[in-house]
Image (cartoon, rainbow, N blue to C red; front, side, top):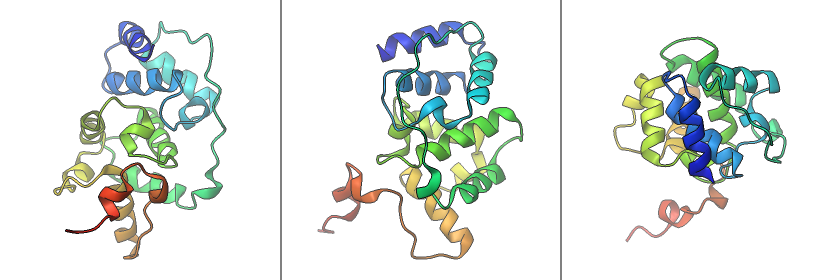
Length: 181
């Protein structure tokens, strides 16, 4: 079904930059995949504006039952938003929507591309390079994106013992924290 939603979204797309990424995110969200909450972490109004802007002829009849976002466990929400805003190629509603969606996905327990509902890590890399190219260029060692963003945020704040988000629940915990043989 995810692929079917994706194809329908692409067919209704106006071909704007980010349509491909947002079609993947929305298709996964409609199937209950990823970690995004109601309306992808946007307000109801923002979500409908995003749909009308990128997919003007797409109609969602049934919204997936998701939890409301609980930013109380994310004390760094404002800092994450400001950090991403600093590296954005432009300042407009579309970038603000992306920033809100990315920050909401940072609450997830897996890799950022999975929590966003993107189809691959390469899709996330392409999204970040397109919208936050200066930040993306700094990831010269190909660090996992959520870790990289948090590390950059911590470095900017002068915090060098930085807590990674949700590491204890990540499916790759042993890859990151296992033995170094």
